Amino acid sequence: MNKTTTALVIKFVLTFGAAWMAFALVDNNHFGWVLVLAVIGTIVNYLIGDLIILAPFRAVVAAVGDGLMAILLAFILDILTPNSETSFSGLLAFGALIIFAEYYFHIYILETDNVENKKR
Image (cartoon, rainbow, N blue to C red; front, side, top):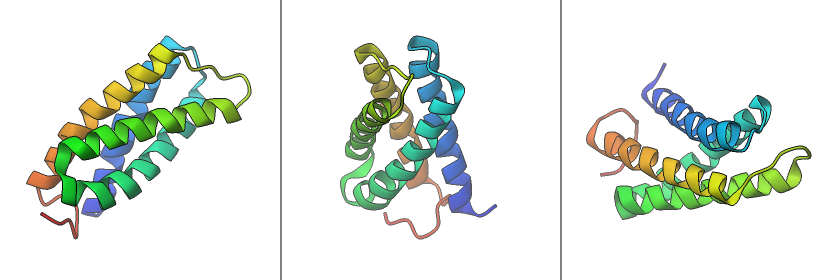
């Protein structure tokens, strides 16, 4: 596995864990819904948060942006998916967990040579 793939796998695991805690345990959504949210969230947060926002604005701004994007994605997926339900507390928990996880993930990315072509 190359360095970027490893980082994406870590990001997916963090996103899936946050989605599972917020939407499967709190809001009782099924595994498939949580999995789809984690895949979409990982892709969007990587493309926008890690590739565009992280380098110029650093870890805090990118983490908050990732958390807000994650909340928005979960809300949109909830609207588009029948038989799913997200509560306000589930959305807030998801956003907070993503912000926390992404902050430390971004520090890891910036401090190590784990991702190819990253800008310092």
